[in-house]
Structures are given as C-alpha cells and as structure tokens.
Image (tube, rainbow, N blue to C red; front, side, top):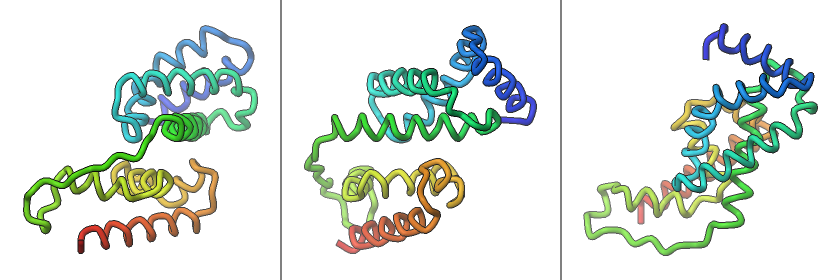
Length: 169
C-alpha cells in the first residue's frame, strides 16, 4: 500500500470509530482482498478462508474502539486475522499421515515440504511463512503476534532445525 492508500484507510478508520457504518463498509470492501490473500497463507480451503475472514471482520468491527492508532490498522487487522486463523486451525486441524512419494530423498517434492511443515508447530510454521514467504522482518512479526522478537527468532531457529533434520532423513 502506498502513502495515499494508508492515509485514506486511516481516515476511514477514524470515521468508522466514530460510528460511520458506511466507512466500515468501505474498509471491508477495500481490505477484503488483502485479508483473503493473507488468510490463504495459513488456510487452504476457500470455505475456511471465507469463514475466518467473516470472523475477522466481526472481531474488527466489535473491537474497533480498542484500536489506539488508526494508522496501525493494517497490522492490527493482521493480528486479528492471525488469531482467528489460529483458533480455526486448533478447532479443525487433525493430525494427518502424509506419505512421501517414491522419488529420491534428496529431491524436495511438494509432498516432502508438506510433510516437513506438518512437523512444525502452528507458531513455528506461521513465523517461517511470515518471514521467508511474506518478507516480514523479525520486529514486524513480533509486533503482529504480540510476542518478543527473541521468541520469533527462537521459533525460526527451532523450525529450521526441524526442517534440517527432515531433510537429512
């Protein structure tokens, strides 16, 4: 987002915080594509994405008054989305036995990657995706997840160790 979009969002957030239903509707219209794209990093089923997006918008609407800095709407909404997705995954995720294909072990296939990432905790998997796939800095991840930056670094380090062991297997 550029500075004009951020300023426009900030103005809409201020209006919505003052009871502007039309402003909130515009926020939802403008930010839903971004929200769905963000949720697709954690959820893969479109029905799950729709459900979590709806719960994210509901929570954002009901807790908008708690947003202390309207300019921080983007990271605030991302935090809500992450919590909503985490809650959804805890409720629905069941361990699955993923089987590797018969290809040589040194060739990382999609099945291997899925199996390797399945060995990570949801917290480790999310920081790995946020840092390496989405390009967030350690500090941005820490702010989004509301954890110390040392915790983010630790999760990344442990996840790398797990993936390294998986690669050696």
